[in-house]
Amino acid sequence: MAKIVLGMGSSHGPMLSTPPEEWGQRVLADKKNKEHYYKSRTWTFDQLVEARKAENLGKQIELPVWRERHAACRKALGQLAAVFAEVKPDVAVIVGNDQKEIFRDAYTPAISVFYGKTIVNTMFSDERIAALPPGIAIAIPGHIPPGGATYPGAPELGQHIVKSLVADEFDVSTLTELPHDETPHAFGFIYRQIMLDKAVPSVPVILNTFYPPNQPSVRRCYEFGESLVNAIESWKSDARVALIASGGLTHFVIDEEVDHAIFDAMREGSIEKVAELGESIFQAGTSEVKNWVPVAGAMARLGFKFHPVDYVPCYRSEAGTGNAMAFVYWRP
Image (cartoon, rainbow, N blue to C red):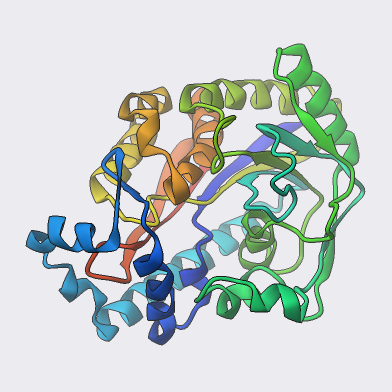
């Protein structure tokens, strides 16, 4: 039977692939957003500035701080890539989310599994780039190599995972090709930054974390992780499998209290406790924590040792907007 030999979790935010001198580009979009999720409600940018002024976040957005934190993130990514290279898994199952890269407004499945033979990552057209929000285009090389790429899928494992999940009463959607030849950045980032463009065969698992009304709950994501372990370990193969979470932690407004609660849960191996924070916490970018829940829950069940590489809150404005970056791995 197949054996899980490695677990990983990594943020994938655009700031990781943007020179720190340019982090302020995203603030233009932050100021226009009238619904920033923070502390279980929505805020305008100006409301956040007022509410968080006692935190003196102005000191967090000075260029030397940005440079230091960007360097820390890049170092952490290098460590994850080194661990992946050392373990040399045969195949990877990557849990991530889609942000209208695969699915458009007309169709948004709650849970999907890709089991095609190839994963096509095409460079954006000039028109697509021009339509992106401020501060996104500069980060494209972080998840799409020059000229694009084609990665190997793992169709046998993917199909087995689907059958096993359905047997466990998870109603999943399936894909054997990407309708727009556009790999979601949640997955492209892992291929580029963790696998260093030398992708092993993989099964992308896509959760709808972002878009109401059919987002799986944190508790359901935890149950999904248990079922995913059963699926992988029942696959009749001698393959060594890595299970990887892509996304998070809190953003587009950073909440270090929430992030530390998640880290505490991972240290304690009690991932189901993340659900106690409440579904209203896990909206917008912070919803990507739900990509971590199945993986962290699986690692707790397997008894793998938790290795926190780094936690770096990358603020980009005095309102506390930005991305809290996290990098961890688990090994037996």
